Image (cartoon, rainbow, N blue to C red):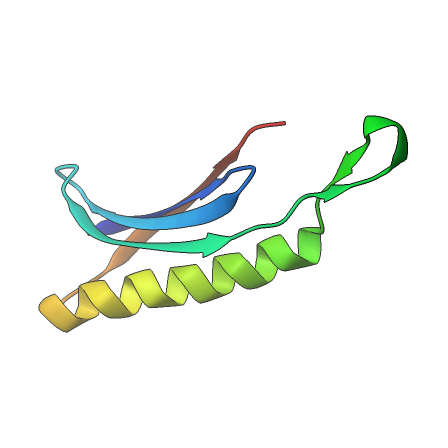
Length: 82
């Protein structure tokens, strides 16, 4: 059993695949950009987050599957600040 975890940060999105015992099976990262507008406003494009999550998640799962043919995903978790 494994858990796919996403962390949406201010500069990158990370996807980690963890074993039930907490071992890191794989990790993938995608850069994110924050648009800075007038008057100090900051804005993130949610569509870019989704694209980054799909891409990084697929890479993390593929990397873990290359070392274990019996990978079974139990849950997905997403965290972020803001």
